[in-house]
Each structure stands twice: as structure tokens, then as C-alpha cells.
Length: 143
Image 1 (cartoon, rainbow, N blue to C red):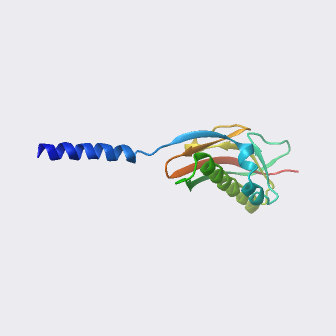
Image 2: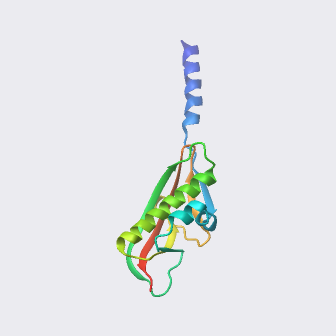
Image 3: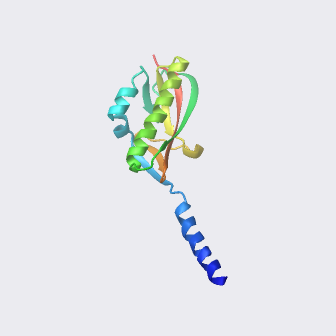
């Protein structure tokens, strides 16, 4: 009986170590994600994007958060992160179009409501099966 308990405990310890979710934080170049063929094809609704800045004369309509996840299984972290970043950008674009705006400004990473402002990088969290990007921005009308 003692041997069975020991083996069960060992198996449980091994199994539980495999179950812990990986959560790797990446800070990746915005320019690379924005210059993919998919981004060029899908981000074209007359909406401009401004990271960590707002041009003068912008008329604020509202603010928006896009929190997206994607399947990362079998993909590199970089590939999954670029894909989920694009998904978040499309959500911001769609919100701008819905509001009659022509820009999203002051875009910042907003993972778990922690704001990280950068003109060069976005934050992505990747695990064994999921990757996530959260962005927050101002929906505005530019002259």
C-alpha cells in the first residue's frame, strides 16, 4: 500500500508539473507586425493608427480596449503574437469605423490592465496553447 501511495504521489507530481501554464512575456516590434501581408490586407478601412501619441487637433470620440487571444499550439511565439496583435488591431479599426472615426491614437499595450506605452513595441503573452495581446486606444476624428 505504501508503495502504491508513493508511485501515485510521484505520478501526480510529474503530471502537475506538465499542467502549469507557460506565460512568456514578449515585447515585439510594432513595425514588423504592421508590415505583414495580412496586416496590409486587413488594415485598410481608412483608419490610421498612432502608437503612444495623439496628433494635434484630434477630436476624441471614445476610448476602446481590444483584448484578443489566439491558438498558439504548434506555432512559434512570434507567429502567434503577430497574428493576435493583428486581431486586436482589426478590433480597434472596426470600432473606429463603427464610431465614424478615422484614427485610433495613443495605442498602448494593456495586458491585464497594466498600461505599457511604446512607439516601437507591443506586449504579447504566449503560452503552450494560447497567446494574447490587449491594446487600448483613443477613437478619434482627425482633420
